[in-house]
Length: 517
Ligand code: ZN
Image (cartoon, rainbow, N blue to C red; front, side):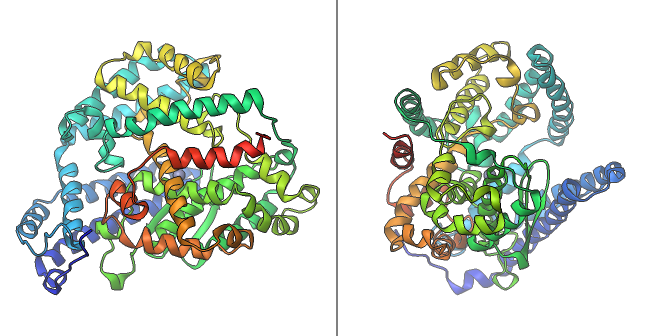
């Protein structure tokens, strides 16, 4: 591949500098929005809710107005006409490509449609909550029909080179990806995973899971989570860990990355893996080149590539590191010390086996590493069919239940445990689900390359030496911001396009022995 060429003239170009300043202002407004919404999830007193909604609405309209200012369009066009700046092989060329995409996306949607999506989405979300509580799909059906219609309109406004509406929505989360390409990787993965999961159930010996049910106080779990985050290289001088109902990571600003987790005193691995997951997102955010002296903050060069790549970072730390035998070799004495008496009777081997139990279940967010992607792929197939007009909303529950039977071998008892379980579609989040599985695929594929390039990584992990891994990710992934698209970065780093093979090799290689196969 052609080496990067950045003529000095490009980085000192005043038009480009002005464009970057405008992007930085939008990012700064958005960072205030992230701060107030983090506060809302963590420490805000309940009575502040009404005014908080006003604050958020004002910030979002200020941000949108700046983002769609025609002056940005003029500056962008001027920069694009400059062949030095706009050299596709250069950093500025990549930055302009992504700025164009952001500007076009922000200006293509009519304000009325954006407002209608927000209004109907909010009502549909309320209807979904009621319908899920009562497991009553017909209550939710008219709302899903409305949101599907609005999502189609949105996709039509955005447009996609392939002509498939789904791709226009997918591109918002995974720039440049198409449903056809994704299906080309997902379909073989789906069949291989379904066979693998069935084989474990039929022929394997399920490990003992009693360690997963020990009692550990919230304070002890918090201390252990913090120790693991420190070992991962999460910088607490530039971040925090707090408690919320729904865990998240907000890389809100330079020097400020906030993680949250939740604790269940009878299930310590929930908080541990939640913390490692958000920590994986967190070290990515901390590693992006946002420092003021780099003058990249606010531009795509200081931003993450896609949701799929973001998720690859969280899943890598949570699963490929955190559910490995090597991790528990290091973590067991630390856990004995910080989690206390309840974990002491179990050795690293027993914990490693218990955290790798694979079992078909109904609920995606509770699914293990072996079955999780099957949950994601069935949603991808169904939402793609709904957007294409090949599946009506009325037929969704039946189609859902058929896929659960065929992928997981289970009979869905009711719609609360079936097609009503996720909030996403109620507020129009379609084209988002595949990024979860893309994350697992990218993580496994990068992991093979990382193991070739870092000498004795398993040995290092078993001694708690996690920084060589963080440094590899820093150099090869974080430092580039959004310079490369996800598929391009994958090929540059691993030499191959995204494939289902590394994930299957990883899962089979680890879990078969756990099941005595
Ligand atoms: Zn995540």
